[in-house]
Amino acid sequence: MKKILLVAAVVLALGIAAVYIFIPSTITVSCVRPVRAMPPAVSRFLADTAKIYTAIQPSAGAMGNDFTYNGFTYHLNKLMYNGTEFSVKKNQDTVSATLIGVDLDKDSGFIYWTANIHSSTNPFTRLSQYVFAHGLKNSMSGLIDQMKNYLDTPAHLYGIGVKEIELKDSVLISTKSHKATEPAIADIYLLVKKLKDYALSEQVTATNYPMVNIQQNETGGFDFMVGLPVSRTVPQTADINIKYMPYRGKMFITEVKGGPGTIKTAAAQLKEFVTDSRRSVPAIPFELMVTDRSMESDTSKWETMLYYPVM
Image (cartoon, rainbow, N blue to C red; front, side, top):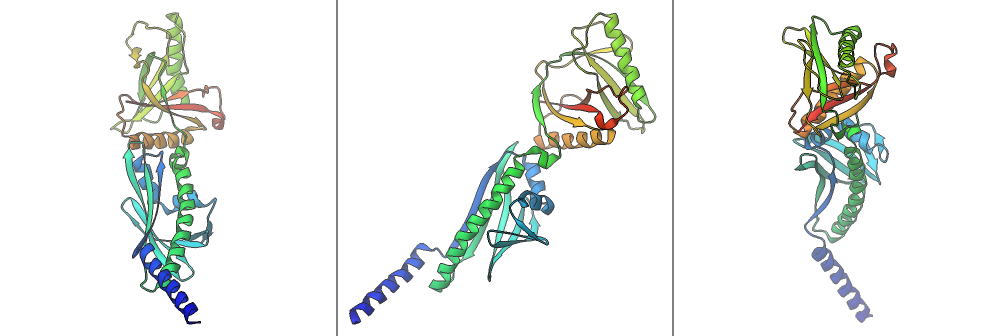
């Protein structure tokens, strides 16, 4: 009997010793994921609780401003520079977890989520904290995977899909005008007709749809320019100019379906994308008018390609 008690005491002592040896005084739970998103967009995401909740909503259950996942309840404590601090609770155990973004390149980085648990000197509590940390690791991993999927999709961050292309049209004829008020469709297509008539007179063909750029000037009026890509160079006139686009020049583009309001919103979103990319802008952006707006009165059917030159 004494021998059994002695063996039990030794086993218990070894078990307690193992708890102190293998479970550190501070248990660090961390998850890191690479993301294909530009650092400014990641920073905005981490400072926007609505977007965070949107990203994790498919897998997490909402409870007011809190959310739960795999038995853990997350509450937003505070927003920080380039990050967010959460309190995470399960039963009576609570820990702080910090989610931050780490820049890697102009168009990529990491999101890093970490929590530190200070281990108790009580071996049984210490073991319970280790089990809590293991479950927290699984919970945080599932949520950070959802955030990665969200950040890897530009449409989630900017509201539009964006592609980078190389320009094929290298020669275009252009003309411009100005008005005290924003130009109407008739004003724009009056210039389109002028360019098409001139191309016909010079026996050249249009190689793409007409394009337009509208800018408000310092006096509050509007300057607008219309361009038409053509198959070869033609002589310039007093009000028709030749412009040479760099062959294989880089462009960010997005496709828009809708009227003026939709186009303006998409243009602002594309501009934000370009700003985040930190790419140089060698020329003005423009709208490629795929739909003939002078012939289609239903603006919801307009198709437009927005182009933003970059280097």
